[in-house]
Length: 454
Image (cartoon, rainbow, N blue to C red; front, side, top):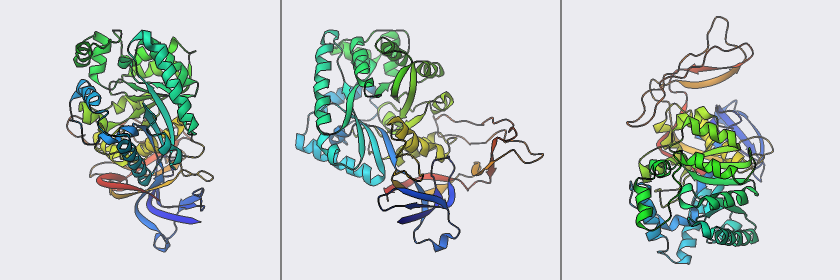
């Protein structure tokens, strides 16, 4: 048996941490129990930071790891696509495989125990087969010429058979609205949903929305200049167009877990439409990739309000300086300080596990599970003037007391969205009530925070 204790233990059965918490693990990593240490000074291992379950990287292109450091930043999607086409085959297969293997090892050592990975070829299959990290491989489909739909589907079906020969969970998935004919969006979605999962790049940039809604903008001009067919001009969002293409091929509500990746232009109306069509929608945010390409961030307040589970991904080393889940969480924390760290960790662990259908084993520190254990070091506390959750008391509010009516969050960095207050209302008898303590009691990530798998 192994026992670890830390200043903050996030089991993620709730978003609040246990102060001076411990977790006991069997020798194979199975959780035996968690609790609060009666005497932290007596613990054989007491860490001055955070313990949490293993991370789930909900969106990655690990086969593009050889592209690290090659891309210009801030080019927008049209410029990024030009660079992808220019740089895609600039290294040997051996070099590509070595780089993706190194990237997977690095993610594993940081504490990533599972990953939803995008593949366009078989480069990663042998590495994934022998790697301890679980991966579900989404075989990404492209093809803007309607007459080529059948040939594209035959090709991805062969790639799926090859992936399965390595023992991988793998199935087709559509890339995006703008790189595919309407027929291919529908056909690849229907094929992928037979596995129970889809991952779809949706509303990644305002350039994409301008192209789909109005038939103009840098991406439209780029495709015209290169003789590539353009997608239908719908007058609606690319998300709503995708939902329409799904409805053309599968019964509604759509069964299976469908991950909408990026969603930088998501609106409340779009989220409502997704919930109406998709039985199990999820959102994946990759903030550092969005800043790298577009200098924009996803609308986290809209996402939280929608109630759709949010997951976290790193995207690829073609659009990121590193594949690091803690860096992604720090970026989100700094841009959206109203989001508690426990909620961010829920996105990065529990929600990702649920999307992959692995919630029975991963995502939370509960007895019987084998979720992995991560230590996050160099942790700070809530900034001066911010409110921090110190405990959750179950039951009604104390006699004569009212529930919290607002929480002052403070200003966000320039250009970022911020919530100035959260209306909670009164606490009914028998309901859970959250009580706030003075600033400085809630953990916060810092720019120096690092994670390691224990």
